[in-house]
Length: 287
Image (cartoon, rainbow, N blue to C red; front, top):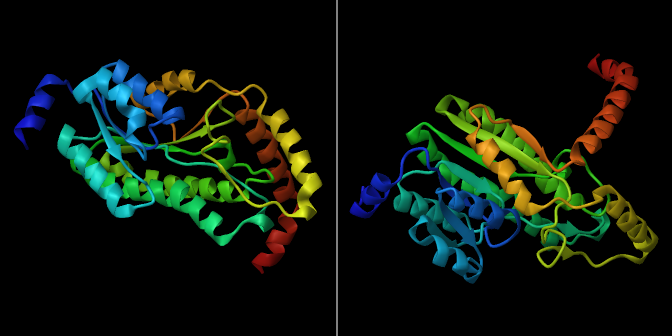
């Protein structure tokens, strides 16, 4: 262990956590980084544009490690996680937050758009998780937070490829939680509803619309505004994240916002009713 790391660890008790957060330049990532730093934790914060972290570096000094990172670059993910571990000596909370929303009917998606969405939202999280796991296993502890969505368990028109990325993240993370539990590692899927982040703003992308869907596009936008209602406050979400990472038995899944529970209940009640109705056909298939 380097002299710098030894000195750092001597100054910080084990109650203070070391975070690795992707997509920390804005939205959830930035708010959670600030909350962690404000309470005395240390954060390795990644962003494509490090200038967005200049104010945090000036305020929090050595407790913030800014790292330039495009999570779609697997080698860079491994290097960034390794650099964070070398700097702080351990990793306690790994937050896969980097991601964006893509808008487009399924028929409107190009191959490049579909692949780009999965590369960031799914594979980026996978690579960072794989990079962190050897360190977490060795220390026998750690908590991986996967930023999913209510769109990770339900689905709506116009964001099919986004749903694909988050449903896949949900599945791989539920498997992961079972695989790493014997090593003392926790996994939590955070499933926000609509929040006042830049998810649907400049960080999002949109397919070229087809004329056949013109009227439906308008209808879907109206539906979305009704469904989202009053967006949640990203700053307030930081207190919820701290509750989760400090819990002795954190949940595998946790909604953020007031709307997701109602959406999930309606969706799952409908699914159960359809499955029950078609159970004779299921049994017919059994043979």
